[in-house]
Image (cartoon, rainbow over all chains, first blue to last red; front, top):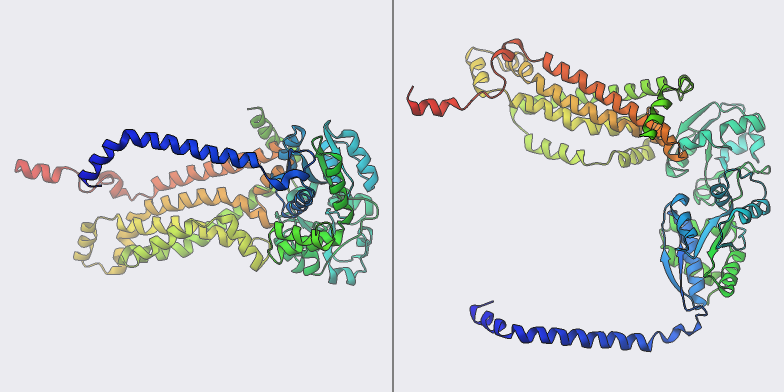
Amino acid sequence: MTPYTKEISMFAAGRGRLVAVGAVVVGAAIALSGCASGDPLDEGSSSGETLIVGSQGYYSNEIIAEIYSQALEDGGYTIERNYQIGQREVYLPQLEDGKIDVFPEYIGGLDQALNSDAAGGTKEEVYADVEKVLPEGLTLLDTAEASDQDSWTVTEAFATKYKLTDIASLKNVTEPITVGGNAELETRPYGPTALKDKYGITIAGFKAVQDSGGPLTVKALVDNEIQLANIYTADPNIQTNKLVALDDPDGLFFPQNVVPVVSDKVDDKAKEILNAVNAKLTSSDLVGLNSESVNDKKSSEAIATAWLKKVGLVK
Amino acid sequence: MNLFIDGLLWIFDPAHYGGTNGINTRTLEHLGISGAVLLIAIVIAVPLGYLIGHTGRGRGFIIALSGGVRALPTLGLIAVLGLSIGIGLDAPLIALVILAIPSVLAGAYSGFEAVDRRTIDAARAMGMTEWQIVRRVEIPLGLPLLIGGVRSAALQVIATATLADYIGGGGLGHYIFAGQQTGDYPQMLAGSILVVALALISEGLFGLLQRLVVPAGVSAGRPRNVRERSVRASAAVGS
């Protein structure tokens, strides 16, 4: 700025403020008129309120949340996405406070979080138990066939060698079995002690691999450093690495079917939309969705859109 | 404060001793890992540091390299190494050695560099060979600083060796992982307290060692600064 222009700008300063005020007024007017004309496509919304959809800090859960969001948006609702809210201890209080309206949950995990005496059992039994302990203001919708639960998993080669099908058949194994997983696994009610007490299966050792059944656990299993690991059944690694999740006919693990938990702000029409989504969501679908994220590195948004189109819920 | 007491009670509970998860076993594992890492780091870094310190060559490069390596997150390194060489002790050992080397290296070459050039010149003038200068002058005089480097490496390694149990390496980290995952915070705190205790013991021992290794002739006269203020001041006075 030369001295000359500086002089002019000083002279103009008083007027400049006036211009600025004018600009704000005009801008506000434009913004307001924008509001008044509104969103012409918004008429379909039956509640007019924004629904907040949340998800756990777990990629697979976020995909399901995104499917719910897009299905609701297609039904005319306005959605606010609040994903990756960590673990149950963090988001459950927020759900109870009504800060989140729709949350994809897993039936067994929810039961264990709400009821410290949860006894497990079939999907229906656990569902009934959750309904009893669910805080007021929250509603459980229909469960999906899809579930993402803990499992005792072995390699295909190990399963063929000892003819393993379900957990009890681990008794056929003649070599020492080393279990690998998070440190917590050692003390879980389905852990090595339960295998011994319930099925008489002796576990030779425990190796900590603290990535919750992630790539390190899978590698340890494939390398035969451990023979038995706890891996989520919807993990696409089970398919890609030729692993076998042993059947659990006695319900050692809690059933973890996907189930939406919703607040009172969710009306009947929205509930129908979510139930329709859950009716279509199968376990193999869930593995496929997870695989698109893990193996193809697609965004949850793209995965959700493609799936909703594929099953015909959104055109 | 209550939690802290719970943590201490956890440590003194006799049920937590013996077996693979016993405090005695896990503490020995932790010491074993830390000791092995320090030994390997010393074997690699001390000769290299002495070479740099004596010749003065490659100093800039090594400082930049070891500084950069220091910034590597150890947990990430363990996970990446684990994916290529499998679970167990190997990956944490390598990752911790990488963590320990920069401190030991710095202790080694700065020990040599801190030796007064006039002392070395005097040794050379007396007819000492290069090898004799290294052995009789530079190594003894540089020892306190080298021990200092090993001391800070030991502190880092003892604290970070808690990560070894991330992939089945054992050690006191087991209590921290298990406690965190099951919400058993007294156990988690107990693990941390034990690690802190080990670190403090190591600090104490190395501090003592650092004093003991100062050569007798030096501890009497020198250490603080070779060229104290007096040189110029006395020149001005003209004495």
